[in-house]
Length: 362
Image (cartoon, rainbow, N blue to C red; front, side):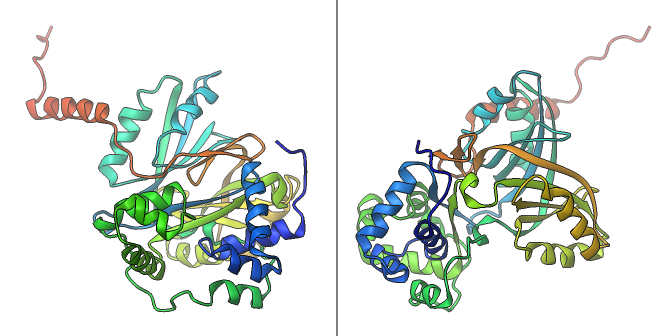
């Protein structure tokens, strides 16, 4: 890995351009940045090859199910934390997995098909995993903001307009159709594959691929994220804050929190602590001053707990090293483990059969 501790201005511009238009061709990106297409492509290849920046893609909603988002806190047996993290990081539906400070060892964000699948995952996957001592699960009732909206903000309006000038302005369907699954999975693997390559691998014609991509883009059915290694971003510290707010104030407060420059994610939760949000800060020293500013601006919101991420093991389906450099992706999709299906079937059979013979009373 290179030892550089900074990104130069072109690097920052390139990352922001791909955050703005992740599938734009290199000619357009180069024109927006004032360089030729080969320079833009070569610079991106250098950044990705060193794990300093990367792109990812994942479905937001599909028409055959309404997925649930849950945050799971995990307590680990002493000495087993990293072993547990390495095991869970390979689960394709685990979106984020982080070693954090405070009253839990690991904090995990998962996306599953429904509450029943979440119960199966917590009970049969986590509950039977060696090294897991305890878990606590909260559902997100609303996801107000997530990391794909975050920008380095290095482009001016002219550059942004050039990058998105052909983007459809009318909104289409906001879901993936069943027939889009193959194409979506290919984009999850590598979202910058050209149309010709996607057509070849999917068995669709190039015209069909373009039409489906345009429809999914109009509807926002796929979410793209361009990330940069945190130690080079200028925002190296991730802090999770749990808050408690009056029920009739949660939506308003969450909307305001989501609009803060520092906010990467904001969700309403099912528990007594009904707001969870993640912020990026310049340093650990700013945690208290940031929280003080929150208290002054949002007196209705009580911060009840906090955790600093020590290692983001997995971020949006991508595995990272302790410095936040990209290692490889785990294609994000729903979870399926036949072993737990067998265990669930045994449990359902026991429930259907009723209680076993009772011991005779003394």
